Image (cartoon, rainbow, N blue to C red; front, side, top):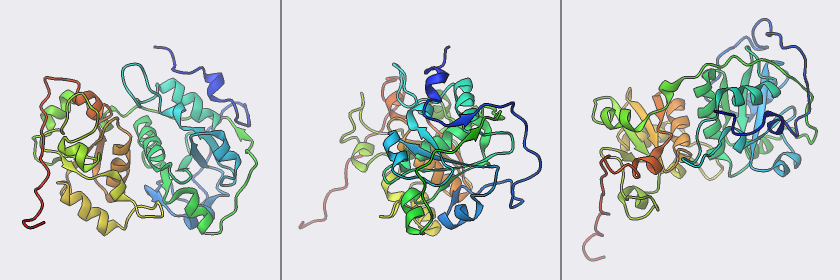
Length: 311
């Protein structure tokens, strides 16, 4: 199969210098090679001089990036790494396409990546996080909690200059075990230690709305709408609150969380939060778009609870 977009078009708008890729020597400037899943603006600001740190702003348009970005940040149009096909929405990119994009960003074997976006881009940033873990970069990719608004709030500097980037050769290895297929999930959902968590709204989960071919949800799934994960500032809620939310959705400590939604986007926020909490996680990429379309797969409809008497 050919790449979904010509590589030359993917790299348009980047200011980068193509040179022979050489693996970076040594460890990072702070001596740490494993990133936390979520980082703060202060954490990132202290590490911006690290030559092995690659900061990427996930954008819907180039205008967002031109208005001001974290110094040294690369521009990533989200559709480059979140393509859709005639068969499915929001699929994983092909390996060589992703390799070309990351090479143009200067991602090499020793690089560590921090993703962020402006307000309203939390879901796309989370999806790129899942994608990079799927590409074999787990432990080397993090998300700036709160994104660009948190950076501004911390009085950190902004730039309007696109950085000059030296191309590199990323070390990518697909990890298909981070994705859940429909047939695998239909068997695994009844096994102990597996928690299916649906990020759609409560009405869609119950089967009252959603626009899918068949209403309802995967039998046995719990419901944790993705907006409940975030506070009003766009940051993730405190860890104890997130732990309670996951447990209320049926994910006990030590369970494997299978994140699902409508097309695999909102579920990426669940995946990111689950990883932050230390869960083993998988993303059901096909999500309800696929599950509801396959009539041989079971569905469950949960009526809304009746209002209290006298109301």
